[in-house]
Image (cartoon, rainbow, N blue to C red; front, top):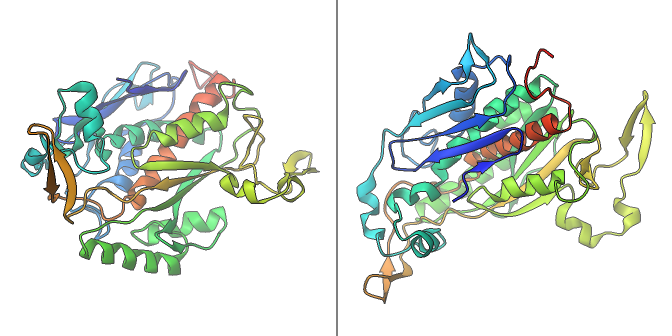
Length: 364
Protein backbone atom coordinates (compact mmCIF):
# COMPACT_ATOMS: atom_id res chain seq x y z
CA UNK A 1 0.00 0.00 0.00
CA UNK A 2 1.46 3.36 -1.01
CA UNK A 3 1.10 6.16 1.54
CA UNK A 4 3.87 8.51 0.39
CA UNK A 5 4.14 11.13 -2.34
CA UNK A 6 6.94 13.44 -3.48
CA UNK A 7 10.60 13.08 -4.46
CA UNK A 8 12.60 15.68 -2.51
CA UNK A 9 9.73 17.04 -0.42
CA UNK A 10 7.91 13.91 0.74
CA UNK A 11 4.65 13.44 2.61
CA UNK A 12 3.84 10.16 4.35
CA UNK A 13 0.23 10.00 5.51
CA UNK A 14 -0.97 7.72 8.32
CA UNK A 15 -4.09 6.86 10.33
CA UNK A 16 -7.73 6.03 9.70
CA UNK A 17 -11.15 7.59 10.17
CA UNK A 18 -12.09 5.80 13.40
CA UNK A 19 -8.63 4.80 14.58
CA UNK A 20 -6.65 6.48 17.35
CA UNK A 21 -5.26 9.28 15.20
CA UNK A 22 -4.40 10.57 11.75
CA UNK A 23 -1.42 12.62 10.63
CA UNK A 24 1.61 12.99 8.41
CA UNK A 25 5.39 12.88 8.36
CA UNK A 26 7.04 15.52 6.16
CA UNK A 27 10.55 14.62 5.02
CA UNK A 28 12.81 16.87 2.96
CA UNK A 29 11.76 20.25 4.33
CA UNK A 30 14.87 22.45 4.56
CA UNK A 31 16.06 23.72 7.93
CA UNK A 32 15.38 27.26 9.21
CA UNK A 33 11.78 27.59 8.03
CA UNK A 34 9.79 29.34 10.75
CA UNK A 35 6.97 26.94 11.60
CA UNK A 36 4.53 26.50 14.46
CA UNK A 37 1.48 24.41 15.29
CA UNK A 38 -0.59 27.54 14.66
CA UNK A 39 0.56 27.60 11.01
CA UNK A 40 -0.78 24.08 10.54
CA UNK A 41 -3.87 24.54 12.69
CA UNK A 42 -5.24 27.43 10.62
CA UNK A 43 -5.20 25.17 7.56
CA UNK A 44 -6.78 22.24 9.39
CA UNK A 45 -9.57 24.50 10.64
CA UNK A 46 -10.64 25.04 7.00
CA UNK A 47 -11.36 21.34 6.51
CA UNK A 48 -12.54 20.21 9.93
CA UNK A 49 -16.07 18.83 10.17
CA UNK A 50 -19.07 20.26 11.96
CA UNK A 51 -18.41 23.91 11.09
CA UNK A 52 -21.64 24.66 9.18
CA UNK A 53 -24.96 23.21 8.03
CA UNK A 54 -23.44 22.16 4.68
CA UNK A 55 -20.89 19.81 6.29
CA UNK A 56 -21.09 16.61 8.32
CA UNK A 57 -22.31 17.13 11.91
CA UNK A 58 -19.38 15.07 13.24
CA UNK A 59 -17.59 17.35 15.70
CA UNK A 60 -13.81 17.13 15.81
CA UNK A 61 -11.43 19.81 17.09
CA UNK A 62 -8.69 18.45 14.80
CA UNK A 63 -6.07 19.90 17.11
CA UNK A 64 -2.60 19.22 15.74
CA UNK A 65 0.48 18.29 17.76
CA UNK A 66 3.99 18.54 16.32
CA UNK A 67 6.08 15.63 17.60
CA UNK A 68 9.37 16.25 15.82
CA UNK A 69 11.26 18.36 13.29
CA UNK A 70 11.03 21.74 15.05
CA UNK A 71 13.70 23.38 17.21
CA UNK A 72 13.41 26.97 18.48
CA UNK A 73 10.26 27.42 16.34
CA UNK A 74 12.15 26.60 13.14
CA UNK A 75 12.49 23.43 11.12
CA UNK A 76 15.76 21.63 11.76
CA UNK A 77 15.95 19.52 8.60
CA UNK A 78 14.72 16.33 10.27
CA UNK A 79 11.33 14.69 9.58
CA UNK A 80 8.40 16.78 10.77
CA UNK A 81 5.85 14.51 12.45
CA UNK A 82 2.35 15.85 13.12
CA UNK A 83 -0.58 14.03 14.70
CA UNK A 84 -4.31 14.72 15.18
CA UNK A 85 -6.20 12.48 17.60
CA UNK A 86 -9.71 11.29 16.70
CA UNK A 87 -12.09 12.14 19.53
CA UNK A 88 -15.64 11.67 18.21
CA UNK A 89 -15.83 8.26 16.53
CA UNK A 90 -19.18 6.47 16.16
CA UNK A 91 -17.92 3.09 15.01
CA UNK A 92 -21.24 1.40 15.82
CA UNK A 93 -22.74 3.30 12.86
CA UNK A 94 -20.67 1.09 10.53
CA UNK A 95 -20.94 -2.42 12.01
CA UNK A 96 -23.55 -3.40 9.42
CA UNK A 97 -21.04 -2.81 6.60
CA UNK A 98 -18.69 -5.61 7.63
CA UNK A 99 -19.72 -7.71 4.62
CA UNK A 100 -22.03 -5.33 2.72
CA UNK A 101 -20.02 -2.85 0.62
CA UNK A 102 -21.54 0.61 0.30
CA UNK A 103 -22.36 1.73 -3.27
CA UNK A 104 -19.68 3.97 -4.84
CA UNK A 105 -17.35 3.56 -1.85
CA UNK A 106 -14.02 1.74 -1.94
CA UNK A 107 -15.31 -1.01 0.38
CA UNK A 108 -15.49 -3.82 -2.18
CA UNK A 109 -12.01 -3.09 -3.53
CA UNK A 110 -10.54 -3.01 -0.02
CA UNK A 111 -12.31 -6.27 0.95
CA UNK A 112 -11.16 -8.01 -2.22
CA UNK A 113 -7.56 -6.79 -2.17
CA UNK A 114 -6.71 -6.82 1.55
CA UNK A 115 -9.29 -9.04 3.24
CA UNK A 116 -8.62 -7.51 6.65
CA UNK A 117 -10.50 -4.26 6.11
CA UNK A 118 -11.31 -1.56 8.69
CA UNK A 119 -14.86 -0.80 7.58
CA UNK A 120 -15.47 1.78 10.34
CA UNK A 121 -16.04 5.05 8.50
CA UNK A 122 -14.13 3.72 5.54
CA UNK A 123 -10.99 3.28 7.64
CA UNK A 124 -7.88 4.29 5.75
CA UNK A 125 -10.02 5.02 2.67
CA UNK A 126 -12.00 7.75 4.44
CA UNK A 127 -11.85 11.40 3.49
CA UNK A 128 -10.64 12.01 7.04
CA UNK A 129 -7.15 10.89 6.04
CA UNK A 130 -6.86 14.08 3.97
CA UNK A 131 -5.80 15.64 7.26
CA UNK A 132 -2.39 14.29 6.24
CA UNK A 133 -2.61 16.18 2.93
CA UNK A 134 -3.46 19.40 4.77
CA UNK A 135 -0.65 19.02 7.30
CA UNK A 136 1.85 18.48 4.48
CA UNK A 137 0.31 21.32 2.51
CA UNK A 138 0.55 23.72 5.45
CA UNK A 139 4.31 23.18 5.62
CA UNK A 140 4.60 23.39 1.82
CA UNK A 141 2.63 26.66 1.70
CA UNK A 142 4.85 28.20 4.38
CA UNK A 143 7.89 27.12 2.36
CA UNK A 144 6.47 28.53 -0.89
CA UNK A 145 5.63 31.81 0.85
CA UNK A 146 9.37 32.45 1.19
CA UNK A 147 9.30 32.78 -2.61
CA UNK A 148 6.06 34.83 -2.67
CA UNK A 149 4.06 31.93 -4.15
CA UNK A 150 0.38 31.99 -3.17
CA UNK A 151 -2.24 29.30 -3.70
CA UNK A 152 -6.00 29.60 -3.36
CA UNK A 153 -8.83 27.13 -4.01
CA UNK A 154 -12.50 27.96 -4.35
CA UNK A 155 -15.77 26.33 -5.36
CA UNK A 156 -16.83 27.30 -8.89
CA UNK A 157 -19.81 24.98 -9.34
CA UNK A 158 -22.27 22.96 -7.24
CA UNK A 159 -24.70 20.84 -9.25
CA UNK A 160 -25.77 23.03 -12.17
CA UNK A 161 -25.08 26.33 -10.36
CA UNK A 162 -21.96 28.05 -11.74
CA UNK A 163 -20.02 30.95 -10.25
CA UNK A 164 -18.93 33.99 -12.26
CA UNK A 165 -15.20 34.33 -12.95
CA UNK A 166 -13.47 36.75 -10.58
CA UNK A 167 -9.95 38.06 -10.03
CA UNK A 168 -7.46 36.30 -7.76
CA UNK A 169 -7.69 39.11 -5.19
CA UNK A 170 -11.51 39.02 -5.21
CA UNK A 171 -11.47 35.25 -4.72
CA UNK A 172 -9.16 35.66 -1.70
CA UNK A 173 -11.44 38.33 -0.28
CA UNK A 174 -14.73 36.48 -0.69
CA UNK A 175 -14.26 32.77 -0.03
CA UNK A 176 -14.28 33.16 3.75
CA UNK A 177 -17.61 35.01 3.62
CA UNK A 178 -19.79 31.92 3.07
CA UNK A 179 -19.76 28.24 4.11
CA UNK A 180 -19.59 27.04 0.49
CA UNK A 181 -16.23 28.81 -0.06
CA UNK A 182 -17.45 30.30 -3.34
CA UNK A 183 -16.13 33.74 -4.36
CA UNK A 184 -19.30 34.66 -6.27
CA UNK A 185 -21.48 35.60 -3.29
CA UNK A 186 -24.78 35.48 -5.18
CA UNK A 187 -24.02 32.03 -6.59
CA UNK A 188 -22.87 30.95 -3.13
CA UNK A 189 -26.35 31.59 -1.73
CA UNK A 190 -27.93 29.42 -4.44
CA UNK A 191 -25.31 26.72 -3.90
CA UNK A 192 -25.99 26.64 -0.16
CA UNK A 193 -29.74 26.35 -0.77
CA UNK A 194 -29.17 23.46 -3.19
CA UNK A 195 -26.89 21.61 -0.75
CA UNK A 196 -29.40 21.98 2.09
CA UNK A 197 -32.24 20.83 -0.17
CA UNK A 198 -30.33 17.67 -1.08
CA UNK A 199 -29.47 17.14 2.59
CA UNK A 200 -33.18 17.31 3.49
CA UNK A 201 -33.87 14.65 0.84
CA UNK A 202 -31.23 12.35 2.31
CA UNK A 203 -29.14 12.92 -0.80
CA UNK A 204 -25.91 14.69 -1.79
CA UNK A 205 -24.50 16.77 -4.65
CA UNK A 206 -21.11 17.24 -6.32
CA UNK A 207 -19.31 20.14 -7.96
CA UNK A 208 -16.06 21.70 -9.17
CA UNK A 209 -13.15 23.16 -7.19
CA UNK A 210 -10.61 25.42 -8.90
CA UNK A 211 -7.08 26.04 -7.63
CA UNK A 212 -4.88 28.96 -8.67
CA UNK A 213 -1.17 29.38 -7.86
CA UNK A 214 0.47 32.74 -8.58
CA UNK A 215 4.11 33.91 -8.71
CA UNK A 216 5.33 30.46 -9.70
CA UNK A 217 8.61 30.83 -11.62
CA UNK A 218 9.08 29.46 -15.12
CA UNK A 219 10.98 26.19 -15.40
CA UNK A 220 9.38 23.88 -12.83
CA UNK A 221 8.79 20.36 -14.09
CA UNK A 222 10.39 18.11 -16.70
CA UNK A 223 9.38 17.69 -20.35
CA UNK A 224 8.67 13.94 -20.40
CA UNK A 225 7.96 11.76 -17.34
CA UNK A 226 8.18 14.24 -14.45
CA UNK A 227 5.91 16.82 -16.00
CA UNK A 228 4.53 19.45 -13.64
CA UNK A 229 0.99 19.00 -14.96
CA UNK A 230 1.40 15.22 -14.71
CA UNK A 231 2.45 15.44 -11.06
CA UNK A 232 -0.38 17.86 -10.28
CA UNK A 233 -2.92 15.62 -11.98
CA UNK A 234 -1.59 12.64 -10.05
CA UNK A 235 -1.86 14.20 -6.59
CA UNK A 236 -5.25 15.77 -7.32
CA UNK A 237 -6.66 12.49 -8.62
CA UNK A 238 -5.38 10.90 -5.41
CA UNK A 239 -7.98 12.89 -3.45
CA UNK A 240 -10.69 10.29 -2.87
CA UNK A 241 -13.73 12.19 -4.15
CA UNK A 242 -12.09 13.42 -7.38
CA UNK A 243 -13.21 11.92 -10.69
CA UNK A 244 -11.61 14.36 -13.14
CA UNK A 245 -8.79 16.92 -13.43
CA UNK A 246 -8.36 19.83 -15.84
CA UNK A 247 -5.34 22.10 -16.31
CA UNK A 248 -6.05 25.49 -17.84
CA UNK A 249 -8.81 25.32 -20.42
CA UNK A 250 -8.87 21.54 -19.94
CA UNK A 251 -11.53 19.70 -21.92
CA UNK A 252 -12.51 23.04 -23.44
CA UNK A 253 -9.57 22.72 -25.85
CA UNK A 254 -11.53 20.11 -27.80
CA UNK A 255 -13.99 22.76 -28.99
CA UNK A 256 -11.37 25.27 -30.18
CA UNK A 257 -8.81 25.79 -32.92
CA UNK A 258 -5.14 26.50 -32.25
CA UNK A 259 -5.52 30.11 -33.39
CA UNK A 260 -8.22 30.57 -30.74
CA UNK A 261 -6.36 29.11 -27.76
CA UNK A 262 -2.61 29.44 -28.40
CA UNK A 263 -1.04 31.54 -25.62
CA UNK A 264 0.94 34.20 -27.48
CA UNK A 265 4.05 35.65 -25.83
CA UNK A 266 4.90 39.31 -25.20
CA UNK A 267 7.40 41.23 -23.07
CA UNK A 268 6.36 43.77 -20.45
CA UNK A 269 8.89 45.46 -18.15
CA UNK A 270 11.49 42.89 -19.26
CA UNK A 271 9.23 40.05 -18.11
CA UNK A 272 8.02 37.35 -20.51
CA UNK A 273 4.25 36.85 -20.32
CA UNK A 274 1.45 35.36 -22.39
CA UNK A 275 -1.61 37.28 -23.60
CA UNK A 276 -3.90 34.45 -22.51
CA UNK A 277 -3.49 31.55 -20.08
CA UNK A 278 -5.39 28.72 -21.73
CA UNK A 279 -2.52 26.36 -20.87
CA UNK A 280 -3.03 27.06 -17.18
CA UNK A 281 0.55 28.15 -16.57
CA UNK A 282 2.08 24.87 -17.76
CA UNK A 283 3.24 24.10 -21.30
CA UNK A 284 5.51 21.28 -22.45
CA UNK A 285 5.36 19.84 -18.93
CA UNK A 286 7.00 22.95 -17.42
CA UNK A 287 5.71 26.11 -15.75
CA UNK A 288 5.87 29.24 -17.91
CA UNK A 289 5.55 31.88 -15.18
CA UNK A 290 1.82 32.44 -15.61
CA UNK A 291 -0.72 31.49 -12.89
CA UNK A 292 -1.13 27.72 -12.58
CA UNK A 293 -4.83 26.90 -12.83
CA UNK A 294 -6.42 23.49 -12.22
CA UNK A 295 -9.97 22.26 -11.68
CA UNK A 296 -11.19 19.04 -10.13
CA UNK A 297 -14.56 17.33 -10.48
CA UNK A 298 -15.90 16.22 -7.09
CA UNK A 299 -18.49 13.45 -7.02
CA UNK A 300 -21.52 13.59 -4.70
CA UNK A 301 -20.77 12.08 -1.29
CA UNK A 302 -21.80 8.40 -1.75
CA UNK A 303 -23.00 8.00 1.86
CA UNK A 304 -26.68 8.93 1.64
CA UNK A 305 -29.68 7.85 3.69
CA UNK A 306 -31.79 6.80 0.70
CA UNK A 307 -32.36 3.06 0.27
CA UNK A 308 -29.84 1.54 -2.19
CA UNK A 309 -28.97 -1.87 -3.61
CA UNK A 310 -25.86 -3.75 -2.55
CA UNK A 311 -24.72 -7.30 -1.80
CA UNK A 312 -24.08 -9.47 1.25
CA UNK A 313 -20.67 -11.05 0.63
CA UNK A 314 -20.96 -13.40 3.61
CA UNK A 315 -24.16 -15.02 2.32
CA UNK A 316 -23.56 -14.14 -1.37
CA UNK A 317 -26.97 -12.58 -1.90
CA UNK A 318 -28.44 -9.27 -3.00
CA UNK A 319 -29.43 -6.86 -0.26
CA UNK A 320 -30.94 -3.44 0.42
CA UNK A 321 -28.95 -0.90 2.41
CA UNK A 322 -29.68 2.37 4.22
CA UNK A 323 -26.59 4.24 5.37
CA UNK A 324 -26.78 5.88 8.78
CA UNK A 325 -24.21 8.10 10.43
CA UNK A 326 -22.89 11.62 9.86
CA UNK A 327 -21.98 12.61 6.32
CA UNK A 328 -21.39 15.68 4.15
CA UNK A 329 -24.26 16.56 1.79
CA UNK A 330 -21.54 18.16 -0.36
CA UNK A 331 -17.83 17.64 0.14
CA UNK A 332 -16.70 20.50 -2.15
CA UNK A 333 -16.28 23.24 0.51
CA UNK A 334 -13.97 21.06 2.59
CA UNK A 335 -12.09 19.79 -0.46
CA UNK A 336 -10.86 23.32 -1.27
CA UNK A 337 -8.12 23.26 1.37
CA UNK A 338 -7.16 19.69 0.37
CA UNK A 339 -6.74 20.82 -3.26
CA UNK A 340 -4.71 23.83 -2.09
CA UNK A 341 -2.52 21.60 0.05
CA UNK A 342 -2.00 19.00 -2.67
CA UNK A 343 -0.97 21.69 -5.15
CA UNK A 344 1.41 23.20 -2.60
CA UNK A 345 3.07 19.82 -1.97
CA UNK A 346 3.82 19.34 -5.67
CA UNK A 347 5.06 22.91 -6.15
CA UNK A 348 7.30 22.75 -3.07
CA UNK A 349 8.77 19.47 -4.29
CA UNK A 350 9.50 20.91 -7.74
CA UNK A 351 10.89 24.16 -6.32
CA UNK A 352 13.48 22.12 -4.43
CA UNK A 353 14.13 19.78 -7.36
CA UNK A 354 14.62 22.69 -9.75
CA UNK A 355 16.99 24.57 -7.44
CA UNK A 356 14.74 27.49 -6.54
CA UNK A 357 14.76 26.42 -2.87
CA UNK A 358 17.91 25.07 -1.17
CA UNK A 359 17.28 21.43 -0.15
CA UNK A 360 19.06 21.65 3.23
CA UNK A 361 19.13 25.17 4.60
CA UNK A 362 16.88 28.10 3.73
CA UNK A 363 19.55 30.48 4.95
CA UNK A 364 21.95 29.33 2.17
